[in-house]
Image (tube, rainbow, N blue to C red):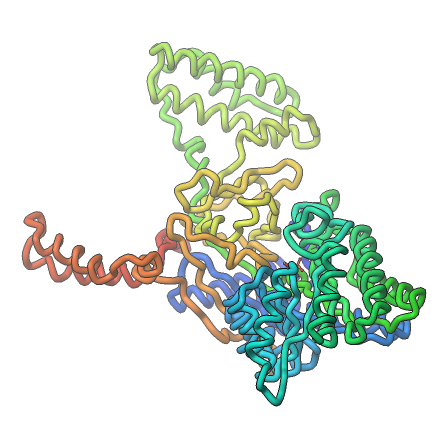
Length: 620
Ligand SMILES: *Cc1c(COP(=O)(O)O)cnc(C)c1O
């Protein structure tokens, strides 16, 4: 039976299984395998992060078209605008694409730090919105004033009263003795009574890091009024947390924010005309139907936002607000796929050919061998129990010094083979015992990537990402798989999980290349990724399609080389190079005629990246 690895659950029709390979469900449907091989023939080895701008475009279109549909169905008067929150992915190959793709929409960037603000000011087209959130100092607020004076439509959302004081101070500096007094729009982030759910719920709720209480909102209002800046007060903002699994908490938050909006408007905030509902639109990462997390569609989401804002505005007799969203995960997650080569299968030593049987073996080993030969459907369970019993006895004999290392090796191989065989023979039964055994004999796949770099949320939050091989999909995967990355950290593992079991193929990687794809890695993972063990951001490639529907590489950025990595840590690179040269030149273990050759080789290695290059399958 074909295993589609839950593609219909998490895949959004972006990919399809084409005979034995996974292909892109777009234009000429290239397979991920052919794209991977194409990149590797150009000399790029190790893991590859593929970006597909057509998938960014798809998400943008979906977001805007659903809000447009809902607005026209409800005859909603407010506008719909959106910004991309930079913290979700700041990489230039992503941001440059999203800026290019958004020209037909009211789409801008959201910044939460000074560096992000610089990206937003430089990259957002004039006229598209910029929003500024997070904690700000005087410099950051000054940057927002500069952006406004440059003609940007920029809204600074204040998180606390002291930020408002700073805005007033900067306003005095920038706008006194000045014919044209220009300042950013002001937003206020509200501290919600309601909060989100799930791993990111901390962003909302009373104990949240962010936002103004109702008392502070009123004080801020009075302060703006007193300073004559109330006409700059433009937006109410909230964000209830990322990966919002259920729609309920959002509805509560919308009611809360809608009523705050209406009350402040009635109080005299005439310019207040927008509600920014933050991000939180969830992505379905599950590969198993029963683990599905998201309980709503984008359609339901848009309907609820528009409907509730309209209801509250009608009841309170105020104009319907413009709606802003800051969805990041929903826009970015789909677009990136990490492809990583499998380097080794670790239990391959458990093969019959590795047995070192002697002419005379300990009786228990002879018996294990007989069990292995004679096991069949009828006796499988009994023989299995016998084998496990013998294993215990034989290991005890080894500890007591009665059998040797070869005997112990034979024991381990035979018991492993018997367990594997009996699991196959008993595959119709579904007992806990078998599941436990299956767990014990999972195959460890060593994969050329760093989990800390490419999937930090798995390490930090237990967030699972869809994983599947990109070839062999016409064959039944038989091995319960756990995945090891190449860092020297035992946390760099994706263990076999009976709740979302991953089965992979029994491949001889010396004979056949086998690649795993990790999907939905386009949101948060890249910049959160850490250089643990000094493994860096992998080689990335932007894949586009021409008018004939053929794919091409728009940009390839190779993973940082060893010297650049050390440079980033502020090592004195010249000193390192000098030291390396000196120890070779001074070594009397190297023949003088060989020294320049060795130095040359060493410098060649310094210009390459950390990921492993070895083990290229030699096709037979
Ligand atoms: C993180 C964040 C977002 C993005 O959230 P997603 O769940 O990625 O959509 C939006 N707004 C603010 C204020 C944020 O902090």
